[in-house]
Image: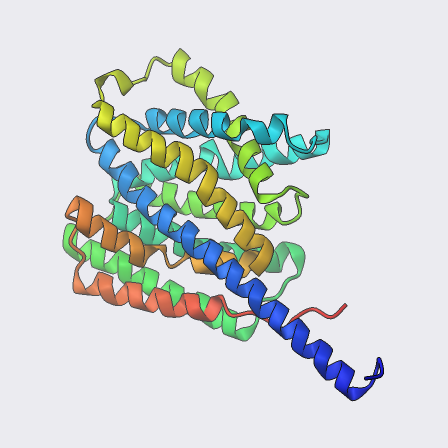
Length: 313
């Protein structure tokens, strides 16, 4: 078979198509694992905040344990340049302590299901339009339709919550919207940071711990001594290991494989998973409007996460 012949071109196109399909499958698998962990995080955080722990306890556990687990990446791994450390500081400002603080406040003032139904679905919309405005990455018509569908689902979530329990807490809603915006900017920035998924997770934990732990001790807000040891261990494992190591690494990997817009869209499936977990573990029973809204959001995710036209070399 001659190079440049029609048969060779078809063979190359077939190989590229298969390679692209394999990459997308890996990306969606990483995003799916991140979705499962993130969904459980809303439930686990809500549980502790309605019992003994406060926001600062959760942040201290998450970043202290995460830093210890990921310290070998920073110390023994490939040496990071000054630019990489500064990139890590920026990523920590977006998806580190400020993000966790915003979500924790939102979860505490609303519910696990409401928080998971607002922040993740808003993220792909923010990411899509910020990418369009700042990076000139115009979304396709299908992706725009997906965003519109997600917004319709969000309106259903808010409307269902108002019918069930009255007007939502404005501070809680604002905190969740802010968290979505921070998360979206993170997805756009990470792909251009030059960091690997595990390096980004390690630097995010490290810089967040540098800020959070001194404040945690100086403000005198620790409640861990009053918390049952079983709850501390559960939170330490979930916040410190799953949320600080596994979930960020899987999400960063998905961003690298799928692109920020598609990865962010898959994360919008969180409401469906989180609503189910909130029902099973917290007794938060979703209404029929909530179920219909979750289905609409899932349809919007399907449209927004579809791959666009591949770039040509």
